[in-house]
Length: 229
Length: 166
Image (cartoon, rainbow over all chains, first blue to last red; front, side, top):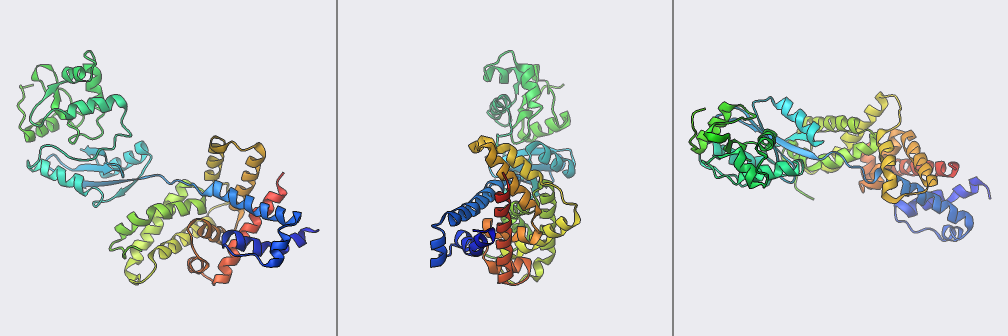
């Protein structure tokens, strides 16, 4: 049998495979022959390959962001479908968005709707109407160590401060106060995860990624008292 | 069917993922697909006011995406899709096919890359988006018979390369 002959039922085979059409009696009979079986297997293989190659394409996930004005300047927030992933300030929207794209491997989309609850709680915080946050946090991009440090910092109530050494003790690494300080400097969600409540020994302010003035401003909002320094 | 989107932002949030996936299938290149997706929603944003309330929004968006991808594909020199290479690289871990299968898969990938953009779009819409031939025709222009012919032609080519491959 020639190739030409094999091709005569192609439309019927394709209709059967992708349109769910019932083959005519003649086609059904031909499908019981070796040539028919081979031809059908060829189409099945082609469709299988197509599915393997293009069925499971995964675009980058989306990350939703938004900015809000605040007494400490513009605050930028970003959330995945799971929860909050970033809080930023003292930077441009463009650099914030660029960092989201690079560090999260996600496609940033401005979405006041998807960040509404975060923005609402932050506004209330800056207005002095709320001191604690109740938000879902997406920790997937946070290292286990930093996560422990941030969780320990989050357990410090608003209006209070603790030292780097105290956080180190709380996570079971009493000699790790320097590592704690460095980790807090990498807090991807400042303000909401309150690394600003962790200060140096002796009541001194310590360091802050957003600048010491910012750290003092946040502590003032929360009513914490500090030693001079 | 959900209600009509009230804003282009809502439109983007609702459909961006599937449009991007479709554009990846059409263009094979993640960055190009991202660009095409942005252009698609920019165009949709401008045209949203003219969309009739009873329109099929999804089909309308796919039409814009198809046109965007096709004009992009026309504008660039033909080159092998990075998506296809990446997928092949990740392939053995999934079900460890024999080398022969890998070669056949490569042959299919090359054949898809070589399809005319209209046939490729018709095939992807039929196979992965659940579009009927009337919807495909509304995306690509032409009638239902032409839409069906595009899908069938594409599949015949994919099968033919398997017969020719070792």
